[in-house]
Amino acid sequence: MSAGSARLLPGGPVAERVFAEVAEGVAGLRAAGVVPALATVLVGDDDASAGYIRIKSRQAAELGFASPHVHLPASATQADLHRVLRDLNDDAGVHAVLVQHPVPGHLDYDRALQVLDPDSDVDGMHPVNMGRLALGLPGPVPCTPAGIEALLAFHGVPVAGREVVVLGRGATLGRPLAMLLAQKRPTANAAVTVVHTGVADWPRYTRRAEILVAAAGVPGIVRPEHVRPGAVVVGGGVRYEGRRLLPDVDESCARVAGAITPRVGGVGPTTVAMLFRNALRAAQRAAGRGSAEVDDEGAVVGDGGAGGGGGGDRG
Ligand SMILES: NC(=O)c1ccc[n+]([C@@H]2O[C@H](COP(=O)([O-])OP(=O)(O)OC[C@H]3O[C@@H](n4cnc5c(N)ncnc54)[C@H](OP(=O)(O)O)[C@@H]3O)[C@@H](O)[C@H]2O)c1
Image 1: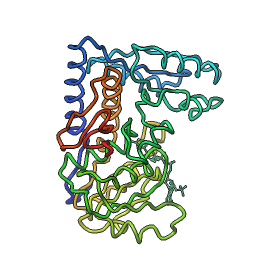
Image 2: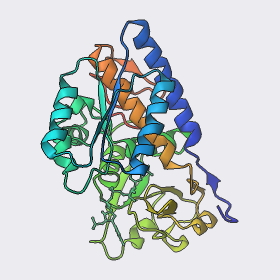
Image 3: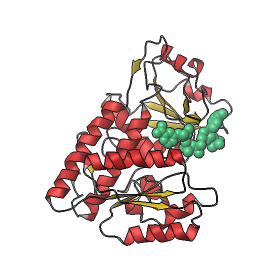
Image 4: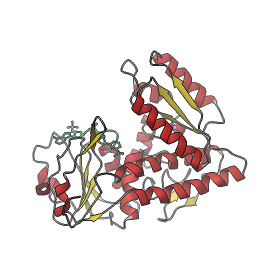
């Protein structure tokens, strides 16, 4: 950050804590004879996607997950992909499934997602899981929104009763985050407003936000004049130009904000951590060990309770 005075809200320590909890949960399952498995599916030979899969497989191994991998050629058909997902659904040894996004242009990712068992969906993006989120029912929570809730809770940023403005209503981030932070739970319970291209004067809303979340994917869209002095600013939206990361939040916002996520190492690490938390919960549910656990924030987690604890619980 430039010469700003805002407190930084890094995601790394949040992720570390979640990883520690996940490793403990995995050890518990293994002690009971269950080896939790997170399967990954990659279609095609995109280098970046293959790299992401390698990182996630390494992380899975470190946490104690088995991580079977299916690699389909770039020529795979929609039916091929569906067949793989159905096989994984039917495999009792596989508890969680990650389909690496994006898939080659001739394939429909959203259609494929619908073939997946919603309970195995670590991204929390299956329509059933979005419905569960809307209704406050247990299930996997979309990872980036869950990570943002966890980040705010970890850094002691009060959310309940406060005015949160989310810039963007995309399915990955803005929309599920708005639902999550409006839920009646200690780490949520906010007055949430969502703004987008249909609200021409969106700065009118962001300027009054106590917590502003940028979720547009438009580099530099949030500037100091859009931020209420002292507000908490969370940068969720990013765009990549090659390997260069271009965040929604201009770094000069640190001069006005009271607290702000760093340009790199903010929301990203928490997203990955939540993916593994979803995978653990999926394995715990499958093993019948997911009920009535209570997490650090006092929220009920796991099946019969909720989906993600201190950044993703629904209740
Ligand atoms: N950090 C992470 O780990 C992580 C993970 C996942 C996603 N992301 C990022 O999060 C961002 C959002 O993803 P998404 O899939 O939810 O979003 P999306 O589908 O791309 O939607 C973007 C949203 O931003 C709004 N928007 C775009 N330009 C705008 C403008 N000039 N003024 C006002 N609103 C504007 C759009 O409004 P309309 O609806 O009116 O078009 C839309 O609601 C992306 O940058 C993505 O890369 C980050």
